[in-house]
Length: 326
Ligand code: ATP
Ligand code: LTN
Image (cartoon, rainbow, N blue to C red):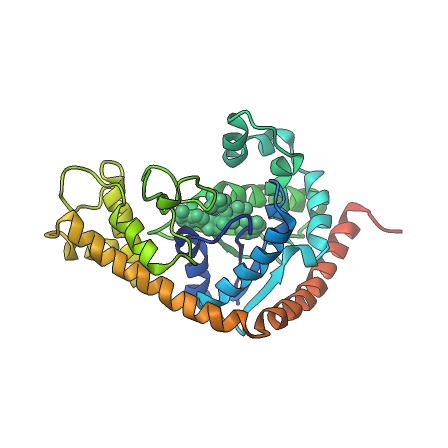
């Protein structure tokens, strides 16, 4: 069985974008793949975090994975920080990665272009991500489009390592959803919907009050044409709403476009708002059951034990290949 693997940083609350770009893909594939879903908490500390808030969010995110339909019997679920081998492999990979290729990562460039003082960890972040993926020989990495470049770096690192030291790592491929690879901010529909956005009206959090979420959809920025059409370049706001609807109802974007072609923007928004609110309500009901049970600890304990054994075997092989042994 082929292996899928992905993670969502606990650096903020999970959003509708996280659900559509990553979690939903894992849920859709979980019956047919050997699925690994983890919390990249070491990645979260590349930017300053409040320790208590981070701790709470790590737990919350695991609860949300499960509430979104990730089946713990079909997925290996674990915390990156509980498995010491991720950071160990990352170090070996850092030593085989060029400054030039790491410097080309657009996410890092975007963050540094604002002139902020950033950590070294933010620079080496994609190499730790490569370690997360290569440690388990993942075949596919379901991610939103913003992470494609990072998965491609993981491929390059694996190919080079294999050439230099002999076949060691599987070469992973990014899995980008054909619809929903970049859910846009509701207030600035040319920007990605992001958990770190300053304008709370632009982002829908999975734990938002469904009534508030409806209001956010109703006040989404559109255009003045009043013509429902899927055209992300010229009509980013409307296209984003159609995309959200298509993803949450598992309908093809063309069919959604046809269904709403005679609607005005107000009635389209009402339909999208309803689907979003229903999705959140269902997730939140399951979430409440999950956090009041022991399931999160049970799932994470099982994930830690399993992945630690697997990762130990892989790191031993890597150390052997590079000559790190007596
Ligand atoms: P931020 O929301 O702060 O920009 P991020 O997207 O960098 O964070 P994660 O939450 O770790 O960080 O992302 C988890 C996964 O969800 C990634 O695969 C990412 O591509 C995907 N994702 C996040 N936001 C969106 C979005 N708006 N549309 C589609 N996919 C998204
Ligand atoms: N960098 C990713 C989170 C992440 C990840 C991974 C995703 C860390 N390690 C391994 C897929 C596979 C992000 O910022 N969204």
